[in-house]
Amino acid sequence: MKKSDLFSMAIQNLRNRKTRTRLTVIGVVIGTCAIVIMVSIGIGIDKMITSQYESDSALCKIEVHGVDTEKTDGKEIPFDDTAVEYFKGIDNVKLVSPTLIVSEYVSISRGKYNNGWSTIKAIDFDSMPDMGYALIEGSFDKIDKRNTLLFGKSSMTTFTDAQGNQAKYKYDENYEIIESEIDLMKDIFSIAPKINSSNDYNGYMDYAPQTGNSKKIKAAGILKTDNSVDYETGNGIFIDLELGKELMRESQKLSNQPAAKFQYSEINVYVDNMQNVKAVKEQLQDNGFYCYSSDDEIEYTKKIMMVVQLVLGGIGAISMFVAAFGISNTMVMSVFERTKEIGIMKVLGCDIKDIKAMFLYEAGTIGLLGGTIGIIISYILSISANAVARLVASSMDIGDMGIKICVSSIPLWLAAAGILFSVMIGVIAGLSPAKRSVKVSALTAIHNE
Image: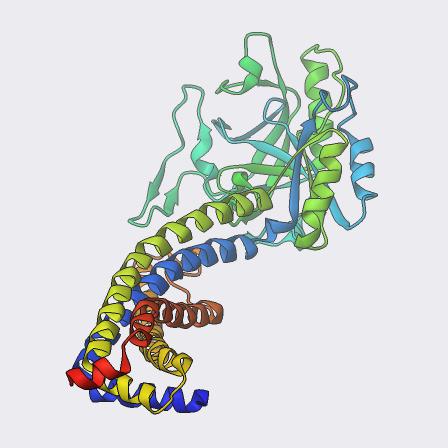
């Protein structure tokens, strides 16, 4: 018997028992929806998190924090311009930018207020646009390296007077600063090397530090807060790298401190392509450098989401397991009801395999119908859930944070796998009834009828 004939017979037999078929198909639909929706939630969250990482300009950045002497057999590797030149020579590296934390050595003030606790970073101004830094006010083109600085958006909140009182400012209902005693873009500030004594705790919490000769300096811009680029873009103060080195040396000289061996606080290495980040990072680590990159978080997140998908898929599979019993029950009843039909087919010389296949085709068809309808409903539920989530996110301004909202995602492979799994469950559930059908005695069946 041809496969097309078996399929046609299966459809016709199911039509003859519409009510029972519909109820059984509904069970498969529920099971398919449960599995697909559960797995799609895991995929959607994973996709949302991954897309957030991939939208970051920092995805190609490797942060090098120092030297691991255990990997270098106790030998100290210079973390200065020598390291910078070495990093530049590594394949697939397009930009190397060192950073120097100079909060301990530099004082920035405006009138009676002095920068209290925000981090002062010395960085190469020319490289900042390529590193992903952006300005909400001002322009990188108007930067005078020796006479201008860049402020974090909320850095005015870190200025205090000699008694530790903060400069006055006000927030609106969205926690945006609307009024401030210090106008970052218009005010003129003073910058000077700090004079540190042994009792200053490195000068960090000295509200009225002693300083050397100061000079006037103005803001060239206010940075956009972006933690993926730099955690200090919110409250930090940025000066040019060469100016920072100069003030650091002058501070050490005025403080009668021994000239310490110069070391960068951090060196950022930017790779030309995110696919090359892992190889470059491994090369740096093999040479004894402490490294960090976003791919560590992505890999860790993917492992977690894989476990979540398995758990959610397992929960959904319970519904399909119940649906399998429904298919098996339907097929067993079908065998009992069609005993005479089976007997006649055997008397007429119908192949045993065809009789068995007929019931398997019916069970598989139930799985196919339920799986197909289940996938269609799953897509509708997924689209609706994402629409509702985006609506809620927009009302909470989450969408403005650059996060692409996706709570459920059904890729084509999941849809195909859902239908295939439903058919497979249908066939497996129909195996026992199909075996029962071929054991029916032809003469007994005709005689009983």
